[in-house]
View 1 (cartoon, rainbow, N blue to C red):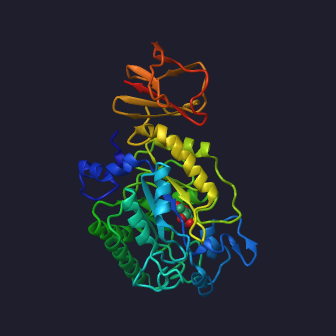
View 2: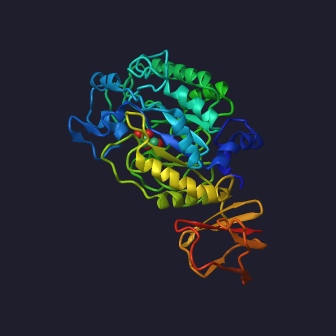
View 3: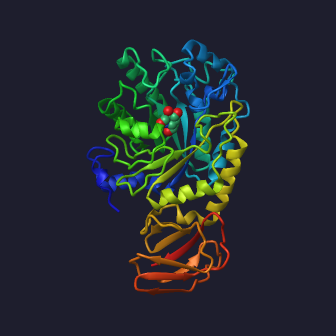
Length: 433
Ligand code: FHN
């Protein structure tokens, strides 16, 4: 399905064929791990005994207006000795995730890699003295997972104060610093799958500066897939993200794909897009946030997102010891079990032929339509609106793929289903057409 938004997004002058080749792995992948990790995982949402309930843990410097001189002392206590990059990469893989994006620098400006441009980093400023980006890039390569980084252009370490709309003095000098760090990141850690910029709502950021940084990134890694926050999204998009309001997705002005946050677009976006979402209410680790989404809800979100032609970037917030919280591990394992059986109804699919269904979602591939049945009718599933001629129907869960009886009359397809749902979360019926 051609996207009119393509004309805007991506590399100026890049042919549709070249773009399709460059994004093929990303569109095929559909499902990735987002990792928010940094020195903010030490306070984990609590500062001097006070819990920050409203804002996520990685915003604690802003939430308590902590001066940079005080906040940066956290680095001295950051020593995640239990960090094992291979364990994280394998967990992502076991969940059926095909790519991973970790915060190399978040809004607090602390760098999770060995930057030569500042000592405010994991190797120079902490007792840990190891480069987490290097170790995770290697682990992902070993596990054949596409590695990517998150980089925040908004930087409270360089700003006058940790505001929502901070100002960075001598911004041109900061641009050189930023480009210098991206030069380090994009030349020292191997090929990146994707780059996730963030903080484009800061007043000094604009599309011209976004294109400047994009040109550098594409010169260093021509194949990389970049999100729309390298540019400046319309303010409503940012507010919508911060206020968790489902919004229509507009094609990126700069970058390759749009990034709705904490919500799933209501309709069918006319561009490549990826929803990023937390498993509880915080991106960074928040010790007291136990508001975990259910595994069923997360699997149905994945099917919903794929049914609209999007990718799902699901977040974990590791602790300051370097461990992924158990509730996250549990959910990723359970999602992995579902993907083990049903992955082909997600990977490499495009938006389904039928939308806004009460009983579930649809995805498709050439010659196949996948019916993701959330509410099992127990008996007969009636579907209208399919234009394709149905050849056969069977359950993805059924290793023999035994044929399910069906009839078609007056544009209505009636499939005879077993009484009991093979999977209470989502059972997939495959139609060959
Ligand atoms: O402020 C950030 C937030 O901390 C987190 O990184 C999310 C993830 O996409 N993005 C921003 C809020 O829109």
